[in-house]
Length: 328
Image (cartoon, rainbow, N blue to C red; front, side, top):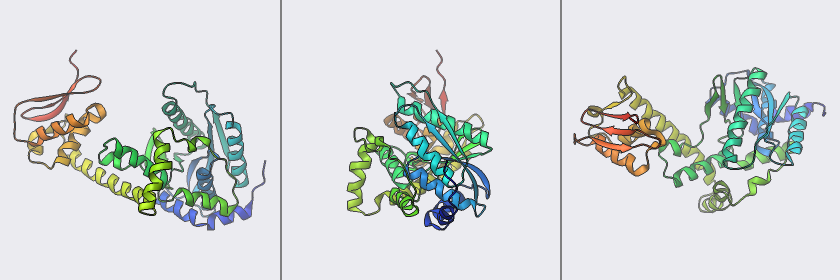
């Protein structure tokens, strides 16, 4: 096991990436001195985040521990864990590890993601941490937003990944690097002399995210340098707009969760459409959602019914917009 490199820890606290991470923690309302679990994959992004947290620990900003999840799907998993453990030891940060047993097959990406978050939440609780720090950055955010736009997302989808969200009761995920680029994080590792391992799946071009990463974003960057960072900042604005719109609508809801037609008649399309989405979620397709929004904000009083995936229907009648469960 490596000895703690005091000079490295000092350099980490002085590197600009520590300031970026500290600002991200502030935006996500992570308390001073909070115990946090840093998701440490052994890759460049999480290694830079871990280094920043080691530097910030000296200022009392956070009290980090490192948590590594091996999905058990790649032969190189043990080497990734060794790299993450070695890096944590060099920074003087306690290290925990979980190895999962996932069967290959349908839905493996989603199953691996859910299992990873569950494992991180479990390690956080054991470490006495209520926060898991993830190293998603501006490029990741831009990919997420572009994919959401391609699917016809509204404001919520345009907002991309939130800076903070609950994983499980009592444990939140926080992304303090959303204003940093991939190059920022790799540059920090190079400047600090931190070793990392490459995940070969990041180079895949046969999946949607890989195509956006390797084909779409470089072309956008050629049109407008720094496109990924700007898209990520636009996502922040969209998320704030969505939160404002939803808070306004929540105040308009009736006690039973429905929306009175009187409150939506003549309303802007975005308001009525968001009300429909709040009621139906992803169980209504885009065309039907807009038809329902038009009906809700219009003057007509004849009942309109829109089937929902999985059963039930969204009903726009003379008095309210509400969801009627499947009567079968």
